[in-house]
Image 1 (cartoon, rainbow, N blue to C red):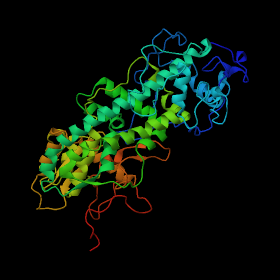
Image 2: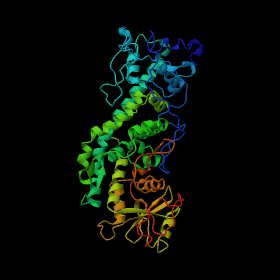
Image 3: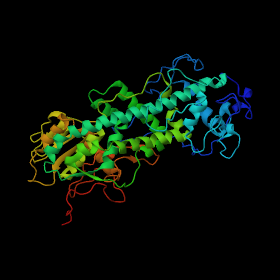
Image 4: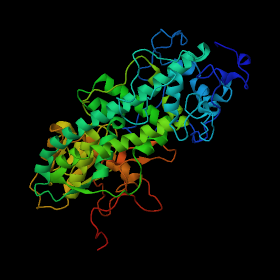
Length: 506
């Protein structure tokens, strides 16, 4: 340990914090500390990556000198420097910057007591105050996505009056503030590009599935599906499926997933649950409406940024894995391959649903292709020869999809028999070939969403422990045949899957 706590008694430690002159005393507007969560549960096999020892972009454990201001940034240094304690209190840092920072007295006649030179302005985001005190002035504001007002100086630009004993800590916290804002700013920029790509790509689906275009979408739900895109890619099986997904995008997705695990209130700020008033968008006007919704998308991302930059405990939880402290940039390029897959999956499933397409699970498990083929009427595979993308036809106007990771088989058919001009088998093949959706996500997601009792509600949900659940991105209805066994355990003596026909008792 670099210093002994005995050198910094509680009454004197923070005389050297931020300025060598008198330190601020307390910020009273901060919210409470969130409890740490042990896991970010998702849906098997599309479970979001768990926190573990193999963190992305984590430098291999080695001896690092976190107090050398000229050394490259290192992700180990958040822990090495005990920066969580530095901000919130604990260990050698006593009460922490959080409680030692004085709020300016607007009633004081002493200009130094109310101009923000040695204190935080009332209602000011803590990060804005921190940067000003750290740099000895300036107007950097990182509380919204805007690189113009929040950019890391070419040099560290720490105040000359800053005590040498805390310069490394201040430098790393400053770096994390800038890195977070840059991440969300570039994420927003990438999302605006992705929404255009998705609406263009999905036009072929609209022409094939919904040529008359009666289907409509809730705009907020569309934007939620879009903005959850990076966390969606954090599911390992999805990241493997998306061709061309860059290593940076994979790492950024994993880092975001870990951060949301540690600070779930950030996810709730970005994707609030519950029914929201929003305009309906006709499927034929998707491209134009999404293109006109950039301000609403920015508001959603800013909700998360503002929470992080104003609530210190949430900020600490979000960054304490160390990934935003490292030398590697998490700045996303303007175009990220696969970022629109969650949006595509939602739009595809909703278009299917509104045009009569349903999924019916078969009782399994099905471990091999032969298991699937033998389960179909006309045993031995007479009516099911597995084709491309784990899809076969059962010869009865529907198609079968086999999800190898879960061992489930789903029949895909239209409830409006005889009124559909597209073949079920061909529709699923077109879905894959045109990148409209990932079949495993489409079917397994709907199954798990229905099993959990969330189908038809918000497409982004939160588990009992506050962690993120994105199974309901797929809104393809999953139903069971009348009289068929329930594929999962009953809940209050009821199967969570609705019957394929509403007149089963007739």
